[in-house]
Image (cartoon, rainbow, N blue to C red):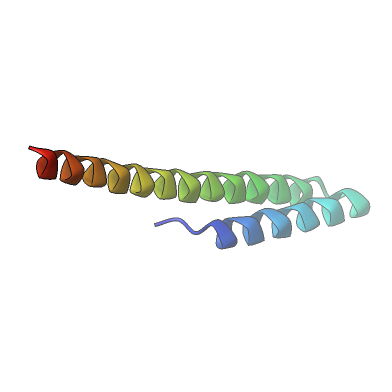
Length: 71
């Protein structure tokens, strides 16, 4: 399960790494930082999608339960 906070930390660390790479003229370090940023954003996206899926499942279960009690 992805973690939104870990994803944000990875993204921020990548941003710092890319900035240092750019400052030093180290293109490899800059590219690594950019990749870390992408990975962090992807982890955040996954965490948010998992949370949305959980919420949808809860709403669906509540709707079914309400329908079953109506009949």
